Length: 275
Image 1 (tube, rainbow, N blue to C red):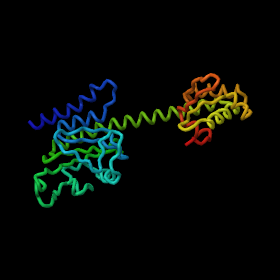
Image 2 (cartoon, one colour; image 1 turned 180 degrees about the horizontal axis):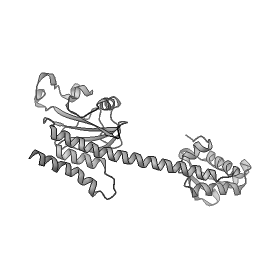
Image 3 (cartoon, one colour; image 1 turned 90 degrees about the horizontal axis):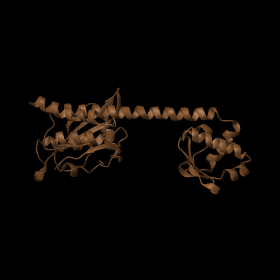
Image 4 (cartoon, rainbow, N blue to C red; image 1 turned 180 degrees about the vertical axis):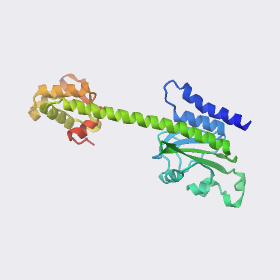
């Protein structure tokens, strides 16, 4: 019966993969399934300590020390370092060993053999599962609950969930690399088709932009200031816009609103970004 129960649990995670129309699985969805099936809290934490997903455990005291439950937030750096030092699933880990204070542990000492801390407060049971794909450590799946020990079925489910999370992290990383390659190619292609005067025009426009690479530039006034022809300035802005480097919008007599979309243009032109 235990095998059937485990199969049903893993199928709940597998369903997320097959039923997600966007082909992307939200990490919080995986955490939610894990928290429901294991009656626990579950967090997906990136290698840098960023919280990517949270599943809330029902009727479980939340551990607030050192942890963040806001997606996009960060856990304590030292705690994340301890997680990254764990190379294989560690079940029923003690909180004191992970760096949590006695107040969080509620006075429980694993060496004493007690099942509960003084006052009847139940002990936390913690499971840390490293997330690896292609031999690369991508993050950590943290699961914790009260009183009930994690068994072999729980470990199998956690490692299955960690594999799913790892595949999603790797997919996102690959997509990011592809997008980065496209941005580099677009900048190189447009600069390769840019004349020397247009290159100077691009640099002049960039130097006029404010923080975050945005601002309104009057090309006529810029031409008078720099001695670059207005035609060269206009052509340069059009080329950068067509290549997806700039996003522009006419403001009439005020000039042209310019926003840098592909920030690699700064590196390629040697213009320092405005802080």
